Length: 143
Length: 143
Length: 143
Image 1 (cartoon, each protein chain N blue to C red):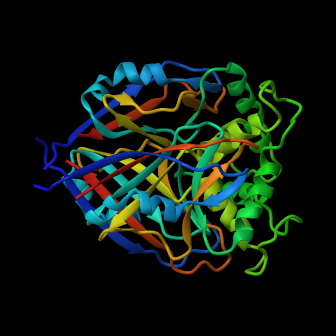
Image 2 (image 1 turned 135 degrees about the vertical axis):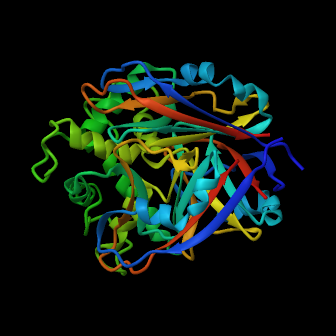
């Protein structure tokens, strides 16, 4: 029989401007319990519908700039068919981007560390012009 | 040592028309075991390749209408390069939308409740014109 | 009290050409521990930022061809706003596709088997022209 461990914590992020931002270090510093797990999973959930989470290249900042440019093409402001417009032109695109990218990421924990690939980092994707402080709910489980 | 709990259940949804539909209440009513968990995760998996699940804004129905409009632009019917056309013009776009949005969502459970943000709800995304009754496989785990 | 089981394994895939490829059988053959679980989850994580994982139709190979065609439209090469271009024209689209589709899938295990729908299979999505051997980190948990 295996000893299972659960740990949950809400993290309130600092304000980030619209765009894609690396939060790997922030998560690791807030969740020191990762060190206690030999095999498990880290689940990060964002409690918002106009910001999202993804995993991508963490070395070259121009990748994150290109993400902002490209998602602005994929989910443009002021599309003629939008009905949900009363919260500003950045709002409906933010909802769409949020679902395209997703509201959670799940990452293996192995031998006390996040088992990310060499170039992988965790992105906070802020889709609003003034999104404010975003709340994450982080769940760690493992043995 | 922590007491871990697992619960799995298949849910057969009623027929939904093509579009985006809130199923948060339905899930909560079917999965009363959520109440027994102090820290855990709810995993919902859709056993189909032409419907999907996502989490987004649950207050204004026009958001869900705009999702339908926008995903019809992102994955249009009758694209000239489609080869998989024999199941109808709504079929290949349904497969694409299904993978863009994803076949599962995973939501934290805290103190006996889904730990969703204020405006977050669970969407069933029905991408076919006549999708029929969709099957979900819900897994709850926690302590 | 329930007996929880965790199992993690790294799998190095063979070389796949650019495109979408079924890996369901490969995963099942590598993870025989699935048979020992009555209720649980399989989590597959790809340790790269230019390849991804998704679940979709596993019967007709033209679906996977249409995925390649369509994602090449959604995240085109040589978009005029790309700044991250020094790794080749297939690189920035690969990063975008990777985040649109996602770096992990999570599938229920029921009675010793993956609880996939009739037509569902696991896709490896290779977005680079010469991606090489990709590493997966597979985590099984359950009771």
